[in-house]
Length: 323
Image (tube, rainbow, N blue to C red; front, side):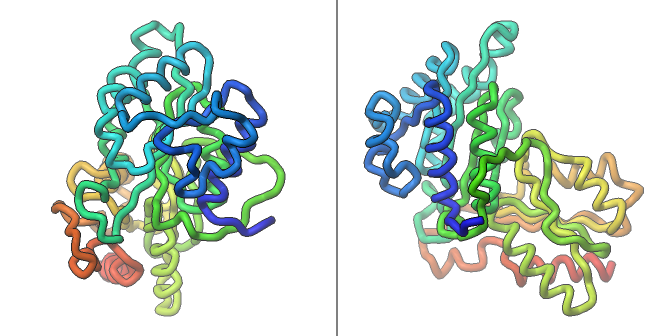
């Protein structure tokens, strides 16, 4: 298997799916210019009819994508930055998520909406959102949060072939991460978590870039004789509750790690599932380790320590094991 970056995996997935299916096309702001490297060569190979630069109007081009999906096309929408999705929220919530239900299943919205999460880089509050949790509250949307090049490619290909609207949140901090990706075609199913570390003392469920930090924390804990089981949900909707509950039944302890805000976040939903369905397996209270409920500072010095890192995760897990 070749070692490629997260962003190269995204590019491969888009290229392969566009070559496989003429109904797949890419649209967004400056996608033909390949600013970030995920659409290199697509314009030259597939032409301007399938690689569409749009005006800076997220609500407008999101509506175009939804309409195209309703008549049989499979658009991939690139928002560049996740914070820009707010401008298209009405289209995503009122049209993409609801149309299949409103039309009694006579139509589907096979559209993919990609958004990169840039944070921990001094880009200020208005560009640092990790807003997948708010869309988890909208029935009809599937939410994908890959944490590796392998997952990014396999999940994106599955999303493009899915008949429902899929929101993919790419952690910008992982874009340059390298990982092994098979040369042959593969798909990753939604709702199937990945267990990266097997352990018996504490379960750590982590999201996006916090997965790698959790693996580092587990390696530190192993030197102390504490074995942590690290789980990456891969998709938040649908959520693989079975794997999480099975792990908690073994370890008796749960730590949920998320770079998003605490209140009404993905970590809270995962914790609630375990509290409801796995309460009698718990030997200690559930812990959440998240970003605080405050605006992200512009100052890089102030932003340091804002998000859970391996040290914080190891400390929280250690405290859980002692309880």
